[in-house]
Length: 121
Image 1 (cartoon, rainbow, N blue to C red):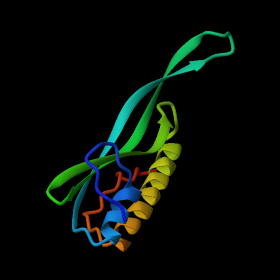
Image 2 (cartoon, rainbow, N blue to C red):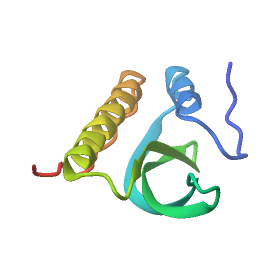
Image 3 (tube, rainbow, N blue to C red):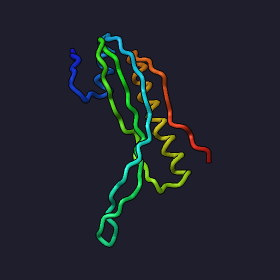
Image 4 (spheres, one colour):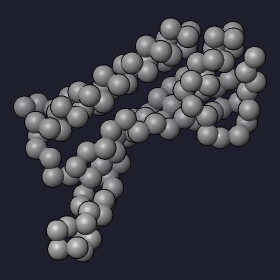
């Protein structure tokens, strides 16, 4: 039997196992696009900063009066990608989110599903 621990971080799999054990779990999710800078080594041998981004989800779960957060990065994209590639990246990210939402729902955890806005081509 899994016991709930207060230390962080936890993973979605742990929350799912708690739900399967009969714990009542309230859930919500917040999505974010986080700009980052990657340092790429160019052919000349010196580092060059390159803009990029992460598509993240932060889940909040309330279990037995305690709050737990699970942060998950779904995709890393390049700041120089085309609109077509950005759209494909969002589609991939949304499909990955859907899989996690389905896993949570099958375990008995309901939450309002959120997705990254689809880009128009």
